Image (cartoon, rainbow, N blue to C red; front, top):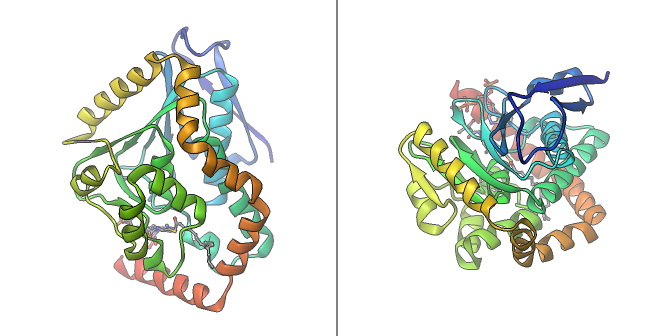
Amino acid sequence: MMSLVTFTRNNALPLLRTSITVRIQLNSASLSSLVRLEEKQGYAVVAMHKPPVNSLSLEMIQALSESLSELEKNKCKGFILTSACPGIFSAGLDIREMYQPTEERLKEFWSSLQTLWLQLYGSKMASVALINGHAPAGGCLLAMCCDSRIMVNGKSKIGLNETKLGIVAPFWFKDTFVNTIGVRQSERALQLGSLFTPDEALKIGLVDRVLPDPEAATAVAESELKEFLQIPAMARYLSKMRIREAALKDLLENREKDLNTFVNFATTDAVQKGLGIYLQSLAKKN
Ligand SMILES: CC/C=C\C/C=C\C/C=C\CC/C=C/CC(=O)SCCNC(=O)CCNC(=O)[C@H](O)C(C)(C)COP(=O)(O)OP(=O)(O)OC[C@H]1O[C@@H](n2cnc3c(N)ncnc32)[C@H](O)[C@@H]1OP(=O)(O)O
């Protein structure tokens, strides 16, 4: 069923040139609550809201994609990507999407994730990830797609931990990682499936700032975004593309191959067994 979600605006904004409401057409009623869009003075806040852990299910991925498309359509210049779930940025891909899936849904899931990455990593908008909680795997990927990363200090960790689940970060996750922290750190961290504390992440350049609490982090994220927005947009975007375009082109040219590799790999007995054990270990915790 189609649902129309309406986000009401507070006042006129110089950088978002539309009428009083931002309208987002979503595929199903359940999408509407997954992403909260808030309009600020000259930028938007995109807050993931899928309790308990903002896992990236097909619906969540599509809701994020739709939100970005809507912002682009409304000529939004920049946004802060964050979480409305306390203590969690995003737990990464929803493992249940990959465990005992139907082939049809698994393909749609992966294809939607490819689309979201192409959109976010190649975005003309300036973006800051306000990492206010755990950000493993797909959560880390979302943060790395932004132009700057501000993390709240505490017990949360960030990194690409795929190998710990017996799976392998796809080449475009790896490319994003390498572009962010460099080849040597990526090679080591990808193999070990390392998850970093905020201070460790700062040391290797996985995040740009660590702040003691969410309020301080929010203020810094806002000022960081404003700094990006002060640069002439075309020059800033083309400079970003100098770094990112090879990775983007690689996935664009190999989408189908990547989809088949994922489906074949994810549905092997070994991977299914590993995912089952991992899901059980998460459930046992509780
Ligand atoms: C030949 C090969 C070549 C190339 C490769 C090709 C293809 C590649 C194939 C595959 C790659 C796929 C890429 C995957 C990337 C990913 O993102 S995988 C997901 C990784 N995520 C994690 O490991 C995080 C797991 N979760 C946690 O560690 C903790 O939950 C977390 C620290 C985030 C929060 O802890 P806490 O607050 O204590 O919460 P709980 O652990 O109690 O969790 C609450 C409930 O949420 C459920 N849950 C947690 N994470 C997920 C998740 N990612 N997906 C689904 N569900 C999740 C958890 O089970 C609890 O559920 P319950 O309340 O018990 O029902």
